[in-house]
Structure formats: C-alpha cells, structure tokens
Length: 496
Image (cartoon, rainbow, N blue to C red; front, side, top):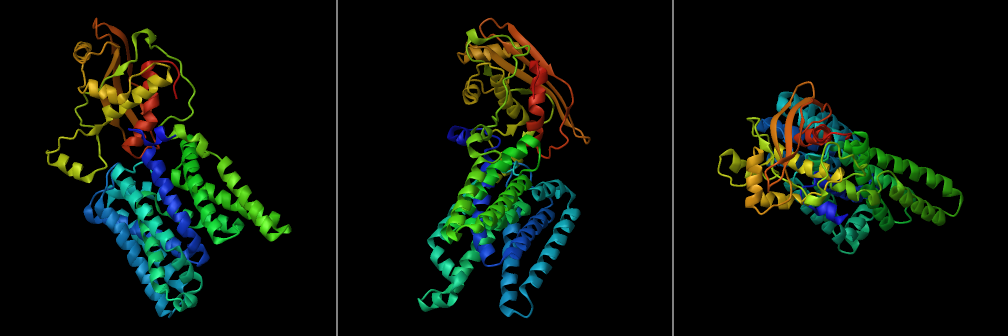
C-alpha cells in the first residue's frame, strides 16, 4: 500500500490523504465538542469559514482553480472562523442571552453571506458548489502540505496539553487549585478547533467538517468505557469512514464528502443500537462488547482499508481487458510511451499546486514545465496498456529518455534511436480537446506504435467520438471520466 500511496503521479493521493487528515483531527476534537455541549458551535463555525472563503473569492475576483493554492481564500477562512469564534466567546462571557441565540444568529448570517458572495462573483460559483458538496479531488500538493503540517502541530499540542484541557473542561475549580489556569487551556482548545475548522472547510467543505466533529464522537461515546478509549475509537471511526467513503463514492459516482459523513452516521446508528441491546448485561461488559463490535463493523464495512491500496494509485480492482487491436509485443520488450504532441492550438495547462510557480509562469519567467492535458493522457495511456496486459516501461523512465513530444513516426523513431531505445514506442497527437456547455468532451487523439530500428509502424488507432462528462467539475475529473473511454476506442475492444 505504501508504494501506491507515496508513489509519483497518483491522482487520488492528495484527496484521500487530505480527507483522512481532516477526519482524524475533527474526530479527536469532536469528543470535547460533544462532551462540552458545543455541537451548535460545530454547526456555525464551518459555515462562517465557508462565508470567509466566498468573501475572498469575491474580493479577489477569481475562483479556487483545481490544483492551485489561493492564500487569500485560506486567510479568509481563518479570519472568518476565528472572528466568529471570538464573537461567540465574548457573547458567552457577557451572558445577557442564551448562547444558542448567538450561535443560531451566526449560522443564519454566515449562510446568507455565503450565498450572496457567490452570487456577486459568478466565477467562484462552480468552485463554491464543489466545496459545499465536499469534493476533495482538487486538493493540490501545497494544500496538502499545509494541512499536514497544521494537523501534526495541532495533534502535538492536543496530546501535550491533554490533561490541562481535560481539567479545564470538566473541573475548572480543581484546575485553579493545583495552579493550572483553565482559561489558557480553553483558549488552546478553541484555537485548535478554529484551525481544524478553517482548514477543513477550505479543503473538504463545511458538511464534512461538521459531520466528523459530531458523528464519530457520538458513536465512540456510546460504547467507550473511558475518555481515552473514546478518543481512540472516535479517531478510528473517522479514519475508516473517510477512506471507505472515498472508495464507495468513486465506485457509485457520488460526492466524496457526504458519502463519508453518511458512513459515519451509519456507524453511529450501529453503535447506538449495539449499546442499547447490550445494556441488559453488565454495564462495563456491555460497553466493552459494543466497542469491539463497533471497531469490527468499521473495519469490515464498505471500502475497508485492506482493499484501498490499489485505489490510492488509480488502480481499483479492475477486470483485465482484452488487447483489442493492439499487437502482441511481448517479444520486443516493454513499450515506451512518449509524450503526446499537442496540435490543438491551446496550451491545455493544468494549474500547479505551487502559487509561486503559477506567478512565474504568468509573467513568463518560469523554466519549470507545466503539467498539461497531453501529459495526463500519456500517464493514462501507460495505465490502460497495463490493464490490457501490455508490458510498459515506467513513466518516469519514458519522460527521462524521451523528453520531447514526437509529431510523427519518423521523429519518434529517430528520438528513440538517439536515446538508445530498442523497444517499440507509442506516441500520440492530440488534435482536439474541447468541453462543451452541454457536458460533452469533443476529442481527437491519434495514436501509433513505431519500431525504432526499422521505423515501421506496428499499430495505429484513434479516438474521435464525443465523451459525456456531465458530472465533471474540474480538469482532473474530466480526464478521470473520459480517459478510459478515449483509450477504449483507440485501442479497440471493451473498456470501462
């Protein structure tokens, strides 16, 4: 599993790891959110974070493009979340009205602000809709790095000061007696909660954040014999439901975030039922048995971790495909897949996850090549050839040996001979790649395999049929939906 998870060029790695980190942090903090009866706070703050992101989109006049990082949107989420948190804490200390009043007013105001900011900025409409759905496919490398560092720091502080947080939460007077200031521990807990919510909303959406703040904790507290066990069980539920939900959503074509939250809700219902059924026995024995059943249920549920290793590398359990029109090249060595030539007249660039590189490219001073649609199709071609039982050279080796994109058989054969390649070379030319407003991808991709030694063409194929991609919201999703169909037509035979 580690090879698939940390290998290069994995389309789902960031999404799965990002969702897992958000679920882990929210599930742990959620135990205190539930025990301290701050559930309504967990509703309002994610919505405030979403309003901050929508405000940042409106002020800057652009959307959060797939694979990019916008500092303004991240700052908007952090500023709105902590401003709302500070306002609620101040209102709670004044106590001129019930705390629920302020939380309800904040939720209503934040919800209205989110809709209004999106309406004022049409370019951010698609991304905000994607965010509210809880999609994670657009999480870039820099986003994931920020989330990982923040999660590690938050977990370190949480466990380092867990005793202080516990005392401040349930026995403030005793904490003062032994020289511990509960206000500081409360400030730390609320600070960690604000960071978790702000980053979680930015990367996974408010529905995911609120769901994992509440449901894993509720399930764990139903069956856990103590607070330590509750934290461990809640974290396990969050992690398993996050990864399992992603796998399930992929197979049934549903939004990833809500699917994970729905699984967590199912675990909560199962834990509640198990706790009630076993309550007839001894209390401690019943809770221990219920906890065991809950863990087994989570681990044996849909998309368990043992079945996810192939999923991380865009290698779900797929049936082997027929070779189609491809010739048997097993005696000639592994096929080398060259970069695809772009003849569309459009750059077809997929934004990088590094904002500094994006700025450099915008002013024309960057020497770092951009990731493009032809590059992604080259990567997909390697995978589709492997599905058809064709031995293929590693993609990194292909890129190093053939850095250019040959436009015809002669140039492909010549480049391969100069690089000392004797195995067949697959090259391609992308002549059209247009997404219509009706959700159709108009594509024309011509492929061929050439023998470098003789220069003879060993095989040709092409894909020219329109491909429906109605549910795709990002460039990555378009390629994910259309890739198998494009190569199924080009290679011939049945494909999925």
